[in-house]
Length: 368
Image: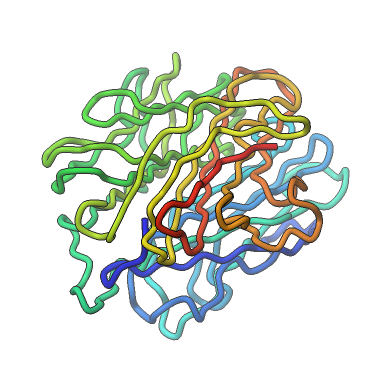
């Protein structure tokens, strides 16, 4: 989706590593500098970070403004346990920039155990300015995009709807959606629906009410005005939910050019793999490309297809973590979705690649 006079976006990579054993939240690196924000503007945000809890320890993660702005709604107290939940912790949501603006940081703390410090590795923060007004006018809610946040606690029965929002702009739409849900038994399975048709699913092992890490979805779909985007509970058990959010962007009115497609044919390479390629006309403009992966197998070290990254093969450059001094396929640069329990988990990962894309560039989504 290229930038236009109506769309302003920014992306920042986190390339630092931190540790803490504190039982209170401690800043563990900045994911977005304050200079990317305009005071009092509304922003869509997708951010993720790789976290490690040693042994059977557990930790928590949240996104906060580094001054007095507080935590980003929905990102608070995301439980993390390497042995159960995977190391990729993500957040999709919306916030109003404080005045004056502040950096957004990753905050971590130790919840249980004493095997060693909580570790925080690389990550990403991507934003779209929902208040931006350019030469072509201002982004208009209900025409250019629609969002809905629900942060109340509720119980959703098997097959029930966790999140539902109507879309009033027809055509090709880019959908981001997320929910924090758990059950007290085992894996919780969620599904993303477009007009009551299942288009994607994901699941995550849960243990308790504190296990409320988000399950993220993204994709481009043809949606008619009046149709809905939903997240449903596909699990056998009732799900406890305390946050859900959806953002739908109209690709027909905002960008100069757009290209969509699902990469579903995965090829194994020595030490890596690929979901295939897509040729995109980016009009030689700064553009962003959204990638989503989901684990397809259970068991130890099986999450590779969700450990994704995006590369512009024509320009011979990565669209995320462009400078890879540790090696192109170092795990630092990929969502860490490995886990050590065979629990039927299908963890999802969403990333965004940013770069100037030419008139006929080959974009590849690769995995570890």
